[in-house]
Length: 187
Image (cartoon, rainbow, N blue to C red; front, side, top):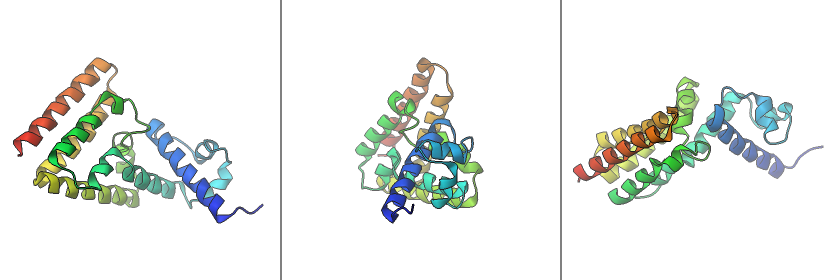
């Protein structure tokens, strides 16, 4: 039976959404094509109707996840320093830390992106450069923009590495304090 183009597009979108969640939860490299397809109720053989390779799927997952990340909202609109500060306080929260599946893809996927082929890294770089450009304009400071991006992503990554919520909170509290201080000193 031949499927309509609309059905194929819907299946592709379901595969991307499901793969993004699976990748952020347990890693992309560790999940096979059969597992990715099973998650949306299809067989592994149907995968190649949507993507030429698993690497091509990962490139699209990274693109989609970055474009839909909490940080992306700050890159796609003019933000005041105060709004940026409020958003970063939410980003550096226990709720976000405990929501790897629905949160920013950089902490859970950063290592896999770093190990991926150049096309995946180029997608990530493009997005990060755009984020940096937007934050630099808001902050009027190119270096501070890179520092805050790195601080926020790193704090979430370190927090997720820890076993207890008490120590996770310490990392996030220190990072929120650092971000607030940096934003106010740069005024």
